Amino acid sequence: MKTKEQVLTMGLRETLKNIMQKEIEKLPETLEALDPKERINVVCKLMPYVFPKVETVHPTEGEPLQFGNW
Image 1 (cartoon, rainbow, N blue to C red):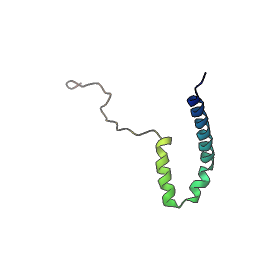
Image 2 (image 1 turned 90 degrees about the horizontal axis):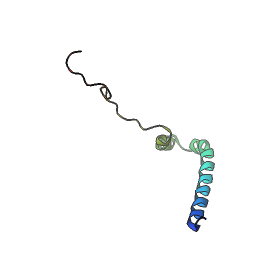
Image 3 (image 1 turned 135 degrees about the vertical axis):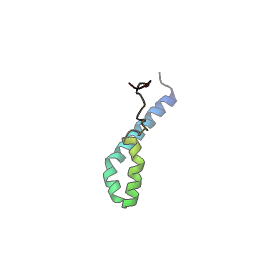
Image 4 (image 1 turned 45 degrees about the vertical axis):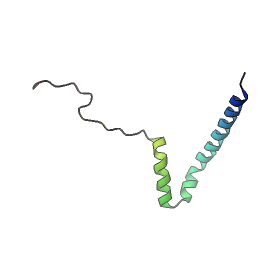
């Protein structure tokens, strides 16, 4: 049996999910209505949700240690 809080949380999540879905569907028109500077700002803020975070890679990382001249 679910508690009242669980039922409310599930309902809230479903409501928020519906709101987000509608906003995502309208996103192209919303972005188009912005001036270019605002549009770039919004796109930059959304990028972390679309692209994986870039990590620094060292050229010797994962390579076996070298002893002497092989």
